[in-house]
Amino acid sequence: MAREKKCVECGHKVKSLFIQYSPGNFRLMKCENCKEVADEYIECELMVCLCLTLIFHFQLLNFCFLVHQFSFFFNQIIFIDLILHKTKAYRHLLYNGVTQETLNVQHLLWKLVLAYLLLDTYRSLLLRRTNVDDSSVSMCLASLEILVNVLSTNFAFVLSFALAAKIMLVMSVDASRRKEILLGILISSYVKIFLFAMPVWDIPVSVIFIVDMLVLTSNAVALKVMTDSTTSRCLAACFMAHSIRFLADQISGSRSLKHLGSVM
Image (cartoon, rainbow, N blue to C red; front, side, top):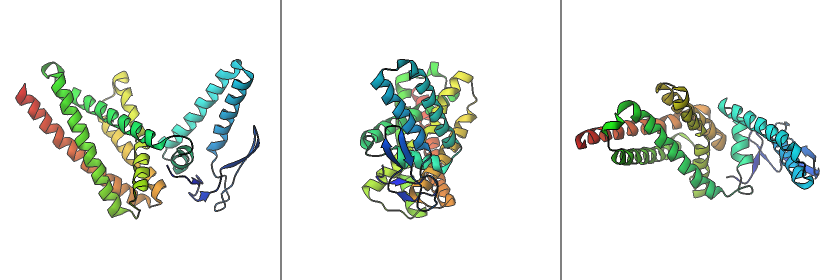
């Protein structure tokens, strides 16, 4: 994503997040703007990397379980802060965590697009299961209808989101900027993974729309972090895009059910 690092507290650009004097001896840098630690999440990541290095170097296999637990606990902290919509967690993830230096952003973008479409397909399957009797519907034809529905609704979402962002927000529209915004929207749609809990705990279908609302608000927070716009403008842009997506989903879904009914 963006090459520059940012302070998770105020969003000001920083030259570096930490200075490492020797393995295990580092100092977190403070932001010149707000005078706070630029990224408090980095400390846990550095400790995990140090412990893993020591384990592989000295073959201390007995400590692997402890490091795994510590890493799992740190990931839980990040995940909880993301669910609470804390802007500092989003800044850490979007600017200090996902960078061109640490991974291939282009490959990550394609993987996220595929995961996003798969989760949307699973969402459509959950809704269709409650509205259509699977025993009376050709699975091959139903799958094709779902695929067309998912692709068309997400195409409408991308176009409407681009239009809403251009109207509501002041932002550049170069190719790298569009890729950055798209990557941020995909990452902030992580809430969709909660859909996998529905068949396990027999959660009512209405929870799907609660998840959709959480995705909307999460997208708004990510958009605010990446554009430095006001919360109201980001919410308005995301609300417009998700509303058009919802309407496209309803229109496409109703046509699919009518078509399936006529065929069967």
